[in-house]
Structures are given as structure tokens and as C-alpha cells.
Amino acid sequence: MRLHHLLLALLFLVLSSGSGFTQGVTNSLSCWRNRGICVPIGCPGNMRQIGTCFGAQVKCCRRW
Image 1 (cartoon, rainbow, N blue to C red):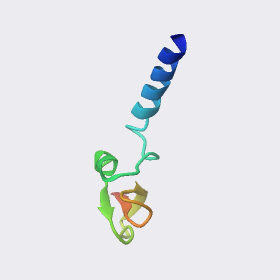
Image 2: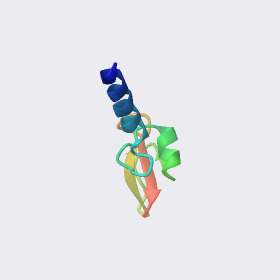
Image 3: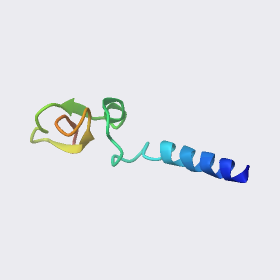
Image 4: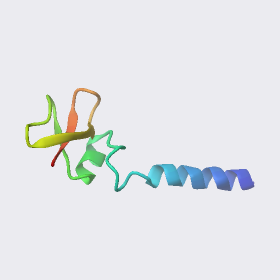
């Protein structure tokens, strides 16, 4: 039973981490939460890529 509690706590920690970090941006919702936009081709000059939205082709971009 203790193992279940430990695994549940670990799962919660993994899922809740990344809310303030941009390394975990992998979909459009997390892109939007990190103040980014989804761009199908690439990031414009005044923006940088912080992740992806719908796969490798759609980039999540945010201003510097």
C-alpha cells in the first residue's frame, strides 16, 4: 500500500512540474499557458521556439 502512495505522489509531481518551465511544451494548450502561439512553419525573427504544438512541424513560439 505504501508503494501505491509513493507512485501516486510521483505521478502527481511529474504531471504538475513544468507549469512554470517551458521545457514541457508539447501541445497547443501548454503552449498557450506559457504565453506562446502555434506557428506552422517556423518562428518569426522576434520570437523563439519554446516547444511544439501538434508534432515536430508546428512550433510553439514566444517573444524574447
